[in-house]
Amino acid sequence: MNVTETKSEGLSREYKVTIPKSDLQDKMEAKIAEIRPQMKLKGFRPGKVPASHIRKIYGKSIMGEILGETVSASSQKALEEKEVRVAAQPHIHLDSEEEAVLDGTSDLEFSMHVELMPDFEPAEISDLELEREVAEVSDDDLNEALGRLAEANKKFEPRGKTAKARDGDAVVIDFLGKIDDVPFDGGAAEDQTIVLGEGRFIPGFEEQLVGSKANQDVEVKVTFPEDYPAEPLAGKDAVFEVKVKEVRAPETPEVDEEFAKGLGIESLDELKELMKRQIESETAAASRQRLKRKLLDALDERHDFELPNGMVEAEFKQIWAQLQQEKEAGRLDEDDSKKSDEELEAEYRKIAERRVRLGLVLAEVGRINNVEIRQEEVARALNQEASRYPGQERQVMEYFQKTPAAMAQIRAPIFEEKVVDFILENAKVTEKTISREELLKELED
Image 1 (cartoon, rainbow, N blue to C red):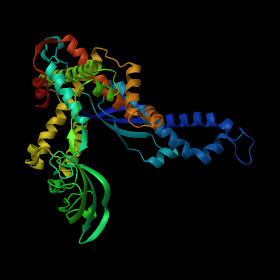
Image 2: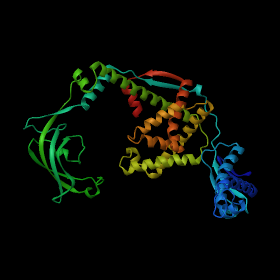
Image 3: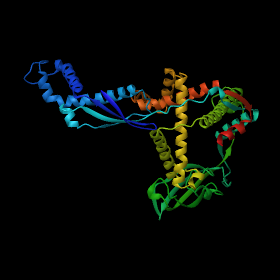
Image 4: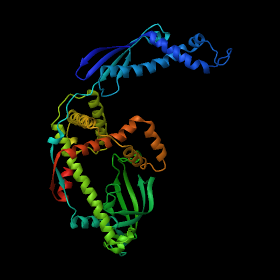
């Protein structure tokens, strides 16, 4: 095998690889010798088919298989010989006439384009100075959380027969929807409960039921949104004949022993302890996330090196595709919605570059310091992923085990968090106590 470097620009390299036809013929003879004992052809005893006959009938097919194996093995060997670390799988182009190679009359020649991993020295970790914001869980925090829990478990009790429905009340209704006096599919229901003000119905529907009473008939006029999922109804005017059957007022339960037992918990004290631990866990997670953001900012400031264009482009395409989905769904950030595509592309390309740069820095820190992922950590992450698909856990596990790219997506965040832990253990980290409200606000900002 002969390997020649034909291009060297920045992180881009191209190599020309030549495999003599004699080497290919040797592989052909070895392959024929391997399969000949099991070969069965009409007119020959099993295992006695002449090698020349096998070559005549199956030569091109065998050589095609050999070419695939040879290109894969020789490309890897060529990179090892050049002692380069590649950023992605090489792009390979066959230069030889394929038919001539298959016939055994030509050497195998192919070109290989690769992007290299940048060569850089990570910043000294022990010089990093970071501030970890921490917060204690106060009685007010606990009481607020218990109040939210009670609100989430509120019940609705019937109002008097003459009571008028108000925002926050629940109304039990029958309804029939019509467009141009014709009922439409999905436009009717009985004993439907709607909480007024939650905005879960068609815009304008709930508001017209405010002030209604039990046993009252109400005509509700609405216009379906232009982006309504049921296309035949989008943008159409509709009239709903509504029968209000009952008006119910919300009642938030007292947070007491009875409330705790209603949730399946033995006592109020146990409920408070569970809630406190949950809040502490959420607070610790927020503290770490804020600290990690500071760490990544610090690493980004301390590193400036050439990035593999292919990695940046792949990251940008992923970000851009997600942005377009948000745009089409009408969920684009208010600031982004005011920008042109050119402005957005420039901004998000910088984000892609930052992500790639930080990914490479963390990977290099992990490699240099022998940060490793334990098998049980991967197994735990796999189990968590599989649990998202009840009844299909085994198929999900098999998919990841058989798909290297998917398994890499499982391993990547585990490795990143372990490298972050390693850096934080070796950096200069001081603590600052702030309120939980401040901590969460910092995170939102």
